[in-house]
Length: 84
Image 1 (cartoon, rainbow, N blue to C red):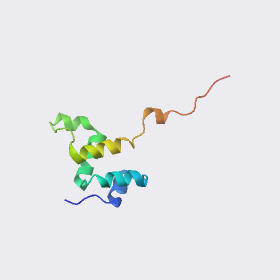
Image 2: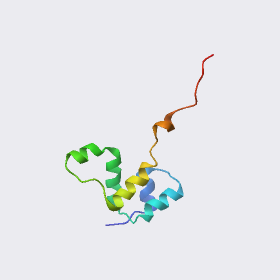
Image 3: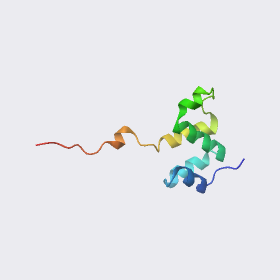
Image 4: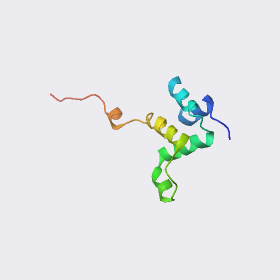
């Protein structure tokens, strides 16, 4: 199994900052583990329904890192608009 490279990260998650790319690569994860982490983030319910155990090890580290990249509800909130 091949360890992930900068190109793999950019292809998988798009343009992110160098620190995040370094964190992802530093996990020592493989391309398969990156794909597994993305699958968990995309929709964990079907994986749990098939009895697949929760992500562990490097895949879990990737889930944690990648989940920080996802926008939160607070990120979607624009400036407050007041009516006069």
